[in-house]
Length: 154
Image (cartoon, rainbow, N blue to C red; front, top):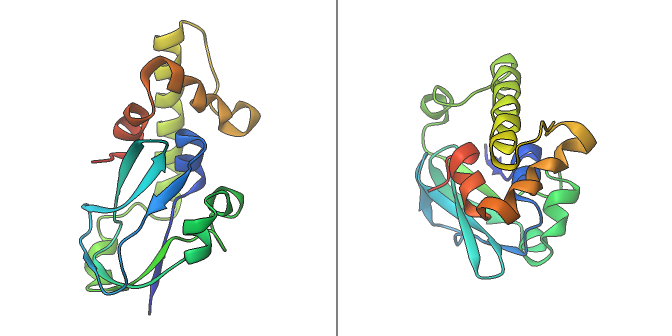
């Protein structure tokens, strides 16, 4: 069974608009926790970690060519690549799943609000307006730092 890999809503809101993606080729081997693909905006890139190890079995050419497809429908047509996992049962032990992921997301939103507040001196709510306030960090600290702080980018 193949595993779909993409970018979730939290990461999309954190990164803001993306111009495109650098995806591995079909047949390429990727490792959990290592760079699997990159999001691009202008000349800047954010390297994103792979959630599982495996062999790339497909890439979503439509999403690669039309990056807004990813933000419009991240959980269905906005997938980026598919993997034939090497050892999914093993890799799942290192992922946050189910109710644990809800708790993790709430902690990260709280942490994001504190980060925004420490930078611009005002109380913020990253949930307000669908979480779009996370983009307010960009003019102050750049595009890559939120990725390092919250997405554990490489």
